[in-house]
Amino acid sequence: MIDYRINSPISTEEFIDLLKRSTLAERRPIHDFDCMDAMVKNANLLVGAWAGNLLVGVARSLTDFHFACYLSDLAVDESYQGKGIGKTLIRYTQEALGPHCWLTLLSAPQAQDYYPKIGFENNSQCWELGPEMTLR
Image (cartoon, rainbow, N blue to C red; front, side, top):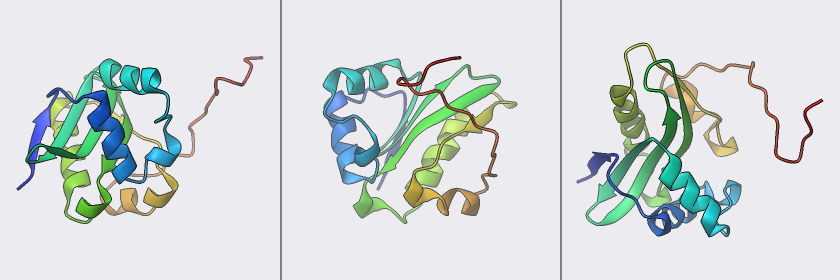
């Protein structure tokens, strides 16, 4: 039985532990506690999936709740994948948003095939400016 909770407290330690049990740890600064702590504390929409007291999934977003939502992390414990948890986390995220709000995400390489299967459309118009890059 999975219990889904919106904006229920998630500790930084729980978040890091989940990322390690998913495929996201390799692309997140899990050894920089201050950064990870800020990622959890500054998200304004967190949807957690719990199996008892164990966090097994999370959708971490930044949003204005009306026009745009950036789903910055969708992580599901590898031993719980394939059970619809990710899709349910996204559904709860959508339900928390306004009716006209767009949901945007950047896919992990392992998830490239997942998102089209659940209804996402590819958008090639994303641009990035990393912290080591200079604005010209």
